[in-house]
Length: 500
Image 1 (tube, rainbow, N blue to C red):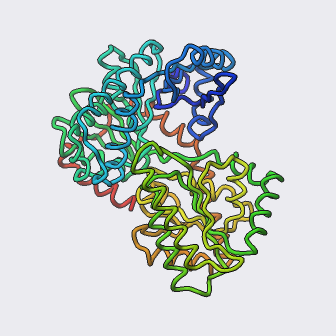
Image 2 (image 1 turned 90 degrees about the horizontal axis):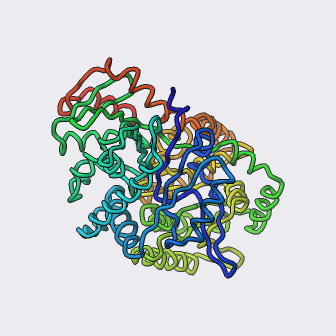
C-alpha cells in the first residue's frame, strides 16, 4: 500500500476550524487556508483525523459541534484543550517567546523561562495522547510546525510504531543561533524520532544538518541524489526541502471575479491614479514593517518627484496582541505612519494608507489586483505566501514584486522578483524607484516567469513531493551512500551552490 492510500492523522497546533461564541452559543466555521486545501482531500479519501487545539476552553458544547462537523464530512476533528495558564506557557511562552524569535535569528527577544519548557513537553504529550488513540496499524501521522516538535518522541514512548512525519513551516536557525536554546539537544533528538522531516528550503535543511553535526553524536547522513537520510541510534530519518505553495488556480480564478475587478478599479480611482505599493503582513516583528516604512520615508525625502505619484498601502493583520512586544510594535508602526504622513502629506495626497484589520478574501484579492508593486520585505520568513498570492492575481502579467532575500520564497522567485536586503534602507528605496520606472515589457517578462513557477510548484506539488518521501525511504534507503555528518563537505557545498 502506498503512503497516499494510507489513513492519515494530521496534528497541528490549531484545528482547521474557527470557533466563535455569541449570545446564541458557539458557531463553527471551516478554515480555507492553503494547508487545509492540500490536506483535506487526503483526509477525506482516507477517512482520517485532524488533531489540534480549538483555540477555546474545554466545553461539551464545542465537542458536540466538532462531532457534528466530523459527521458531515469524511474525516474527524479531534480537539485538544488547554487551560489559560498552559496556553500562556506553551503558546505565548515557549512557542512565541522562545522558538519564534530564536528561529528567526532574533535571539535577543527570547525569554528562556524554564517553566515554559516543562509546559511545552506536557502539551506535546497531550497532543500525542489524543493522536495515539486514533492511530492504528497502517496509518501515517503528519505533524506540523514548531509548536509540536516533540510530539513524535511522545508518540514513540506511547508505543506508536507507525510512520511519523513532520513539516517545519518556519526557518531553522544556524548552529550559532540554535546553540542559545538550553534544550537544543532534546529538540534535535526528538526530531530524529520522525521517519520524514520536511523543511521549507535547502538553507533550512542545511542548518538542521549543521546543528546535528555540532550537537548530536552517533548520527550519520546518507546521500542519494537530491535527498538526504540521517541515521541515528533512534532510527533512519529522511530529511528534505519542500517549499510550500499556494492553490494557484484558486487565486487566479478569484482575481478575475467581476466583484473583485470592480473593487480593484474603485481602489485605483480613489487614489487619483497614484502607483500603489502594497504591503500585507501579520503583525509581527519578523515582517520588517518598521524597516520598510523607514525605506519609504527615505524614498519620499530624496525623491520629491514621486510625491503625489505613489501611495503605500500597508495592511497589518492583528496578531498575538496579548503579547507585550506585539503591542509595542503596533504602537511603533502607527507612530511611524503618522510621522511620515504628517511630514510629507499634501492636500489631496496621503503617502501611506494604513489598514489594521483582517481583509476578507474578495477585498484582499482586490488590493492585490490594484497594486502596481508588492513590497514584501520580512527580516526572516519560512516561505511567505503573500508574494506568491500577489503574483497569481496578476491577470495582465503586469506588476513588480520586491522581495526580501531572507524570505524562504526568494530562491524560487529570484528570476522575476527584485531581491533586497530588508536591513538596507537605501537598497529598498532604490528598488521601489526601479519598480516605479520599470517598462511594461520588463514587468511582463518578469511576472510570467514568476507565475509559471508558482503555478507549477503549487500546494498540491508540495503535498505530493512530501508525501512521496515515505516511498523513497522504503525503496532507496539501503542503496544510499553513507557519509559521516562531520565529513559531509561535498553534500554541504552542494547545498551552498544550489541556494543563496
